Image (cartoon, rainbow, N blue to C red):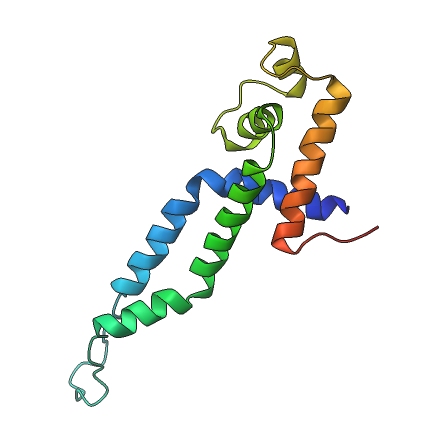
Amino acid sequence: MKRTTIRKVEDILRDYPKIDKYIEKREQELRYPTVPRDDNVGGGKAQYKYPETTLNTIITIDDDRRINALKHQREVIDDCLDDVGHDTEVIITELYFCKRPQYTIDGLITSHLINVSRRNAFRLKNSFIKECAKGFGLYDVD
């Protein structure tokens, strides 16, 4: 797998705890769009647009690419987390989901938070990233 693909997946994993906030923020942007200030002093109101109806807002939210992409990312990561064991979940949670990680993989092993060898811990992490990349459609065969 390419290094850039690994970095992209790691960035998505680091954003995972904030995905719900991103989705909510985007929905708020669509529900309550900011109206640009009219600097046309003395001009007519011929170009006045009526506010969007609730139905149009719902359709916009359902069709929004950014929201759908964020939901897809959340689903892929959730599915990948469901398919892994305890050790992989601890590794991924500590390395990517914590705001300020306390441990590295070596620290997790020495603190006995995971019960695998160093080599196996890296293998677990890499296989999780590979599965996520497949789910995101980023996986390329080298």
